Every structure is written in structure tokens, then in C-alpha cells.
Image (cartoon, rainbow, N blue to C red; front, side, top):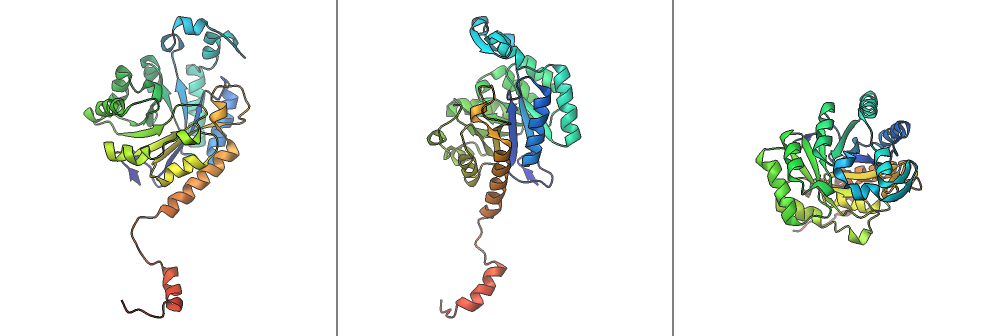
Length: 289
């Protein structure tokens, strides 16, 4: 099956990504457990985040005091959460062995250049990077199917990003998103999914940061073609994204709910099923129309 230019093989239409992000806490063994959890849940891919810390954050911000397992400054915390080539080589090999796709959102040009080494099938533009023209142009030039998150963005900003991808004919999918962690359900504004689809004439997914599963399932009912949620082994673990994440058993339920909704949505054409025909013979005694 093909959705837009995203080749899904014989898999499901809603593409489900487990966002590991920085929930690995700089630990490759923990990362492998999260990958295993995503596979157990039935996800299509896992996703990471890549930053060149000294370029993404100012010196003042990095020098700010912050207690973490790695030290007492923001710099030490940010560096502690970044994987090097060695760790990503191990992640790449592990995902290949396990048969699951992985990709990452780059937060700067150097990080996108770094990710090119792995020839991942997909790219991701994080909401924070939506207005970074240089990075968007670099990603679009790779001509890989790209998920574009739209948190914190205006319709005009989204349009400018979309124009960059359309100019070079790079396949993409917009992802509706609210960038609060965790997000209140009332702020989800899921009607933006059909609105974005109408406005830009493309697939529209949903990147959720809410607590719970219902909102993400509702997004599928409104036509979301992809779902991205953060995955964790324990929401009480250290990390700024853990509280907005889904534990492995919850992710398993989420995937099952999404697949049920997919099946239930049907094709929008009124038909009488074979089972209905049998009931019709018993119940419909008068046909005078």
C-alpha cells in the first residue's frame, strides 16, 4: 500500500512511531529496551533526536545551573543525553537486526549531516525547527519522506515550510502538534487535522504529548495518517519528556486501538454486508419503496 509517497509495503495505513527522543537518558542498553518495547507494541518505527549542543544552545543557557545525573549545569545535562557515532552505529545495527525502521529529527545542520551516514528511510522536522530555512532546505534536498511537526507554528509558517518541500518535490507529511509537555486534552485541537489536510492537500498525522491514549485514537478517527508518541519504560524516570510519554503496555494498547479504529472507519461507501443480507431476510417483511 502507498500513502502519498510513503511506501508501506503490505503494512497498515496509519504509520505509528515510538519517539524515544531523549528518554534513553544516554544509555544504549536502555535504548535497546525501548526499541524492544516499540516492537512488542507493534510500532512501525522508532525515532530519536540529534543535536550539536554547542550550536543549538547559547553559552548562557548551557552555563545555567541544573542538577542532573551528569553534573550541575545545562551543558553537562545536554551532553549527557547526546549519542555519538559509536552509539548510533549500535542503534542502527540493532534496529536492522530487529527489523524496525529508525530515524531522527536533527536540530541543526551539522546533526542532519551526521544522520546522512545512516541512510534512514525517513526524515523528521521537529516543531522547534519549522522556521529554520537552512535546515528545511537541506532536509528537502535529500528527497526522503519527511514528517513535519507543526507545534508552536502559524498557518503562514507552515505554508512557507511546505513550499520548501514542494519546490524540490520532496514527499512529506504534516503532523498536527501542540508542543506542551504534557499537553492538556482540551488543547489538542484535533479539528486541525482535517483543516490542514484541506488547506495543504497532503497527508496529516498527529504528534501527541498528552497523558493517556484517547486523544491519539481520536486523531485517527479524524483522518490522521500517522501517530507519533513518546515511549518510556517508566513515566517516573528522570527526564523532561517522561511525563508526556506512554509506557510499553500502554503503547501496546494504543496500537491495538488504532488498528481497530482503522478497520472500523471503512471506505465511506454505503453497502449491505453479507451478514446484513441474512438479517434482512428475517426482519424486512415489507418493501414498497
